[in-house]
Length: 93
Figure 1 (cartoon, rainbow, N blue to C red):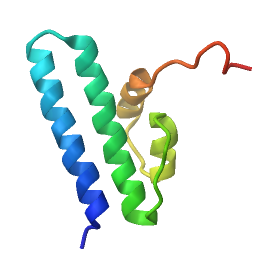
Figure 2: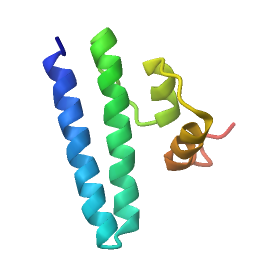
Figure 3: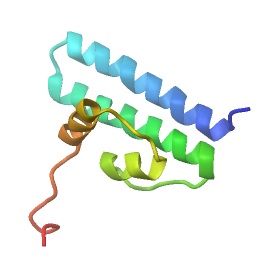
């Protein structure tokens, strides 16, 4: 049986995807991309929470993919990498 917190993450992710669709139709592409990022983030967090029941407070999609221990096709990983915000100059060593 799926944990309640997992269901909440997935419900919220689905809501973000629906919002992204509306934003795309209205040509609000920047906000559409933001909602797509949010949906993917929440789906990955739902996997982590379901397995480990630990709350992750990060937004980096690549880190979340690794923490979720999911193997995704290369083209999907390229897409996820493109959705990730670039590191700020202050974070680059």
